[in-house]
Image (cartoon, rainbow over all chains, first blue to last red):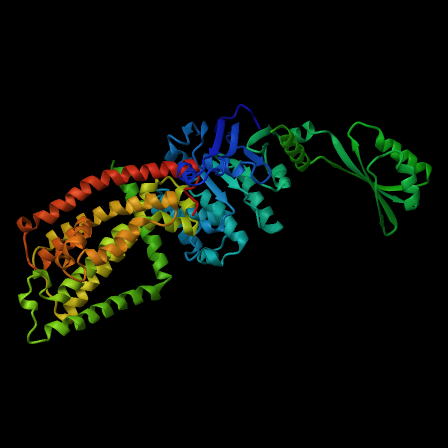
Length: 340
Length: 278
């Protein structure tokens, strides 16, 4: 992603503390009430035009609050959010005209209306002309592979996957330059999730391109789709970078799995236990699987292979699994628990 | 300006179409409501006969001039009350209904502001209320020979004015629902209070001094009195100035106040992040 691309969403020093509703009133009757909840603290980041930007973090990290502030549904306590230069508090209606939000919340549709009626209703709220609405809906139904019969079915009768795709289609109705996707593939089967991911990846390539802010718990999805990723934990942005750089910044480790033949479990254990520390041995029909962790530039693998060769082991396969975003997220989360 | 009005109308139209489509998915409910109105008018007709059919019926000489034909007074009262309460409750419930359905978030994600949502999502209720209120009068005329006189335009003015005053109370109620979610005192006060104290079923003069005071602080009392004076007694503009001015005074005070409270409630709900919670 070129840093020179224009900024679609700019978030500067954003903080959000949810006050206790009617605190004074409640305080009159009770001595100690719940404290205010700090959801975001000094968050700053930018989403560039045509970028798919991932936001990952554990539950309660502040992802949804951040999305809702961008969507103008919640007001920040401090800081600003601008979408293509429009302030999310001062110019909220203009901002809403520039964004689409799709969540995994099925109740956000009218269940007794058909898919088509639902989309037409929202198109009218966007102020679209009747004929333009129908054309746009036809385009989107086509993009999301909805046939005519499916469009005429009541929303409540659609499958979870179709409901989810309809939510993304609705978010795209006014051709927004910025799309916020809050866990779009949650509760989808793998095939439906893959189809939706394919559509999301196409959005950034549209002309004009759509900037996507994607929050997800599915880290492989984030790795697959996102140009850059922010890791958020306890309301604080811990890191913003490309998935590759984040992995690289993380301690460079990998887990090596060796598939061996010609030796028994005891011999493998005897050969490797003095060389590696977290050895795991599994017996499989006709083979032994030995797995251990190592740092990227150490010589543990050479040493292990040498030791096994001395015992007469035949190495059938060597596989390595490098640090994923999950490892990175876990590390940042642990770091956050200590520091915050 | 013209573009803004066009946009507003398009959005109101969107809600009207949506609610009409939803109503079509509950057709039976609609027909049962029409049947209920017919049965209610019929019941009131027979109750009125218990007085009117007697040779010593005092109705004709009653000091309560609007009640000399009780059936006309009752169906006017019910038709108007139905409309008034729509003015109040549909605005009060607009946000609440979307909140509980879970659709408020998706509606508010479009470039529409909260006041427009409140007004637009009440539009269909007014269309329905107009039809149902008309049915009270229509069934009375068609089956039970109830005739009205006077200026329909003046009666309409009372209807619109009272509905606007009640809409202000509806906005206060919506503000209350936005902050407290449940336990709306306006609904209790107006819902149960109006039928009892505003003269829907009997003349307010019978309430006496104590309850009469309650009656006098309720806007529907003036609306109903004005409409009956026009439609039943045939009074003109000069004779109905008192209830008309009282309603205007209510509106002058309540409209800015309710809009101010509403804007505060929206700001508070957004700050607390509770706008879409229920």
